[in-house]
Image (cartoon, rainbow over all chains, first blue to last red; front, side):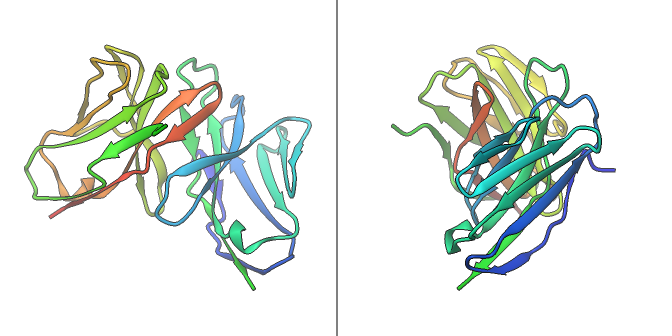
Length: 112
Length: 110
């Protein structure tokens, strides 16, 4: 079983739609969680951290369910520019070197 | 302000050749990382470094060597390239909880 699992998609949605991505992680001791965004043939960039209480950044909402070991990302009012691959990322527990484990990514296509 | 740069951006080499991928950061971040990205696997950690002269293995270190004589540079060497090392290689540095990635090197081993 992969340490971080994501539906690869693609999710093909019209502009203005709301879309949600899910991610599960296998190590219950993981402490930090993130969503990174990767555009085609580009490097990954941090989109947002995920906090236990849930957090929002504009049109993006991230939630964490520790009991189910589940992370989600909700994008409201999708824009064409949201088309990218979204990587779910967790850290290794109690590891001061802060190594990260990346999911394979979920691809989003927003159409006009 | 360049941040993290990688060179070369594209490289074609032959099986058995030694290849060095360069990574340079302008921020003086302590931690640096090398990842490879392949379809279906996501990003996998090859090596990382906590500071100059301190390096450690990641998930997939076999066939790779790193060094870090200066904080700003973290080169990755493929000692004897194999076809399975065809991949996109990303270098990253860390500040706080955030990792910042370079633009990547696309390596093709024939």
